[in-house]
Image (cartoon, rainbow over all chains, first blue to last red):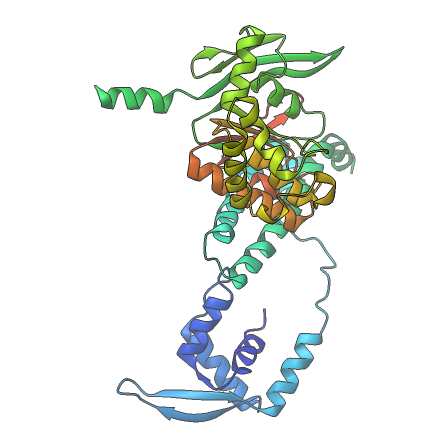
Length: 177
Length: 235
């Protein structure tokens, strides 16, 4: 994920300082890994260096000094271009679950038992996400991000279910090569 | 003494099946399945088509009798209960929802939901008042005067849930309740079912092939070829 574009997106609503950007990021993307302050400030400095953001001013408001940043016109154009850009659909499957099933077959392991255990772990995570999105007062950003994760986990699960059903055939193929 | 009593009730499952066997003709749908449902618990039963999910639900709900094995409800054997007593129990303690709500097409939503109370002898006025409250809880009060054919799939299914829950059952059996719905309607139905069940302490046995629906439950029981699949290596 592009932190610089996310920060530019947050700056699109008006000038803001690093601490506020970090807080708004974590609110908007509640299921994402929280941004580290260091990463926010480094990224802001790079945006300024590249002409995509500029320093609006500094204030201390009785506390430590805070620098406020604003997006430039070039930053707005860069953001619009990024938002229109199509994300490439993943061309190769390099998923750990897939690799473990194949390795388990190669090493005479028990891929079926592995898949059942992995399913249980996936279901546990899906229950947590479902509880998050159906909690009273959950905001739209939370619901959307939980939905995104749920649909990806569900896709894994469907693959695992089909694979478990295919294991007999798959094992014969891997053993033969 | 009261502590002891509480401890006993909390460890005894509300509904339990042991080693169920059930054949349809020459096909064995259940081949030794065991399951326990605790009071207030929401349990998802998942598995491929033909794995025995619906047969398990029918045996647990007392709709069909198993060929072998036992079903107990609140400590009472269900599989050997005389039909009359079984019907009473189903009416008073159980609620059932199917994939297609099976609402009565000639009746309005309000009449459909009031029906179980009318059959139990409640006055028409009281039954309608309560049915209105239940339609409200499921967000379909505005559809009270519509017939099932005039409602969307999601509205009809929420009406079915209201009908299943209006008698205050201890257990709701839901067989693919979202099977015919798109994902948003499915979410509304499941959220309504789960919130209401949690509020009223109703146990739910939920049959589904959809992992996103199963994720609303407290735990998952997976059936494979008529038996309960063991958990994997690390679970």
